[in-house]
Length: 171
Image (cartoon, rainbow, N blue to C red; front, side, top):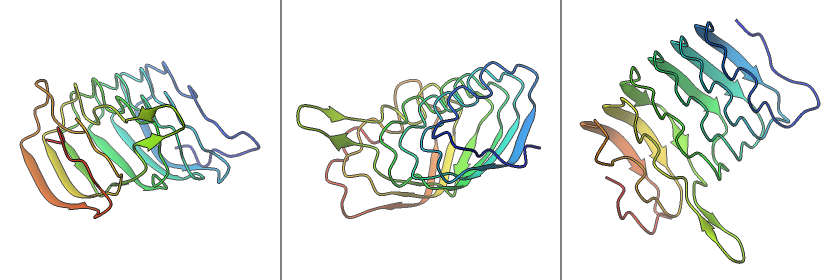
């Protein structure tokens, strides 16, 4: 088990990327200065279980578990995801991950002076069948869960914040 990830850096991008023999990453605590964990476990094809907590105000978690085909247990409830701007394809190709629960997501869509950015599909091309006990606080959610390729079949105890103004394509 990793005891802690900290230091003076604000990113852990690609830290474990391609670690094909990494099987467990439990009780990983991110330092309070970490704001980006892009591709953190990308390509960890043997990874089965992850438990992450800590971190600063994370803004980019894109492709976090991309292509982790054996991943079946994820606990990211201890991460501050309220300011995430980028999280596209976070669970893409995670065909063994069947249940997502106890996650609060916010800030998934934002605008600058010229563009509006969206998260992309949250579970597109994953194996997720059940979403339970989750809260969504982003002002716009489009194509967040379902596409033609999604096996999603159960949604339980979901809270959608009153600030959300556009649910088109959510399911």
